[in-house]
Image 1: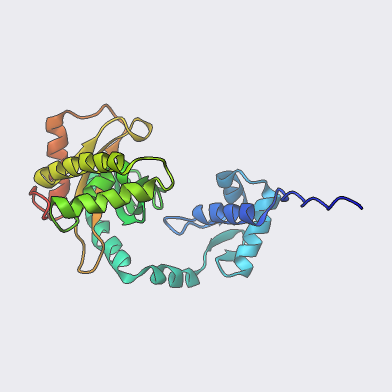
Image 2: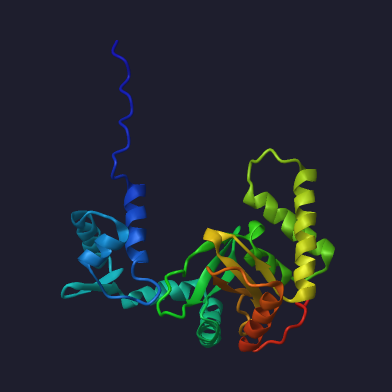
Length: 265
């Protein structure tokens, strides 16, 4: 009796790999609905020209992209996908666009706007003093970043309610990890302590984080029904002094139309 045939290994160009490549190609067109050539896409994604062309053609057929001569751009039907996210996020983007540009212009620093999405905070708007900034879609972990702490600080409720929220977040962020409930609780208590400080101060700061960049983060409340947001001002220069950080936080809040006051509980 012959041995059962072994399952064939997944081909290099698997369905998952194809989806990953398509995602990478679409990312090239964000955040400014850029018009790109085949060469632009191939260079941005590091894909061979033949592979990039095949993906571009597929995306045009499926109405994700439109081709105009040698240029490709996002299809206007993609608006339906954005609308499906919900008007609150779009309203937030519109509300924060002008002040974010003003902050970037007055400080010469990058400005990013994050909202909570599961265990991460995702960047939904950005401004850059030099023009286009491709940071939209960037993610940072809620439980390990000042962005998450500022978002948690805007949660309603006192210390006990916040402790439960953060405890569940720590658990979601480390599924299956052999960490005791007591250990998770200690971590949650530490986070709650930091968040209480943010609530009292009205802002947060971190130095030497992502690639050596420093960040000042403040809360932002947009139009009614829009999600709480965290506005980040960051730079790559030598970290400012504590006094300069406090002044930058105050300036940022003023340009957002807020005073430097404790975060509402």
